[in-house]
Length: 110
Length: 112
Image (cartoon, rainbow over all chains, first blue to last red; front, side, top):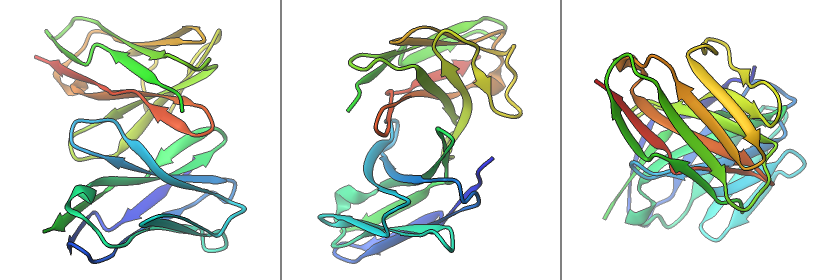
């Protein structure tokens, strides 16, 4: 099956700074890569996604990049705010199944 | 997007009892649903793929006789944790695959 690795496990930034979270995947057949934000005790919420035929996608302060050759994709959050503090998961879709990274706990300090 | 509900949201049970968790797709007919478990401060681990009208597909290492899945309709999948033990205590989340994946609110199971 697919193996998704995510780094870093924790990330602390000052409000207003940028945050970058990186993921790698193992199976070149994976073709869809969503990112989820999960607050404590709540369900994961989709924040942005990218398909394998696209290299970059942006939605306001959030962007995702994908390098299919290297099999890695990254989440970029600019102008971070305290409400961005949460756990972020990347995922790779492979044959209709989703495999998740281990998560990154982002702490934005005011 | 799809709206997914789960019931119950919390359950506490004694060791040895069975617990049923329901996952409902409220506005989307889901031929496929997924069940995950999540331990504290850990990632979501895919347990099984629930297929409407057929047997579930379990991930490696997940005991199918322990975690019974039934997907009797396009809007309902159930996960039954049989003979629950304290190590089964976890956060169980279902999801529905539409144009992307939508998660239920989760069920927190505590086995005493």
